[in-house]
Image (cartoon, rainbow, N blue to C red; front, side, top):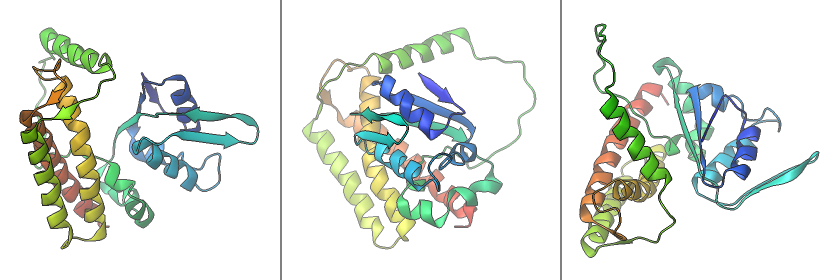
Length: 231
């Protein structure tokens, strides 16, 4: 289900054998980015491929000494951490222009206070609930969903609100807003599958409201991280 400390080349090969998708995990996200170009001189090809995967475009990798890699519907999630001091390396001009940085969602608390030691552990019922949620997501069948009229109206209002804010923003933020429009649609499906009415093929206004709250949080985090990067 997940990859750790592997090159883009290995990740693309693994995707070919896992049509339901994978999670690629790296303690340090810059370590993962540093593998770009290890086998293809420069890294732009690897970065471009990850951009295409994010957009769910068919993946075709051709190498001189190996058989072609073909994935019709690639799905790959990335997760990792980064020290505050190294954010500038993530927001290089090329990655901001290409939209790579804007495809990342940051979880960054506004107040960070060191906690005292505690022997409290995650309780078994909480872990059981977590595993149940993961299984529900992984077991979701391929289904066509539609938005209720109220949900459709609210989603369009959110999209239009981002469009209205674009004019007064630098290009990096404009690109972020464009990605949030897409993330909002993706998150609403997660909210629906994990909700109380998962059996219905109608996505409700409640699902959209949850997704928009998530997008507002990620927008705030992204803006603060971008400012800290000095880009």
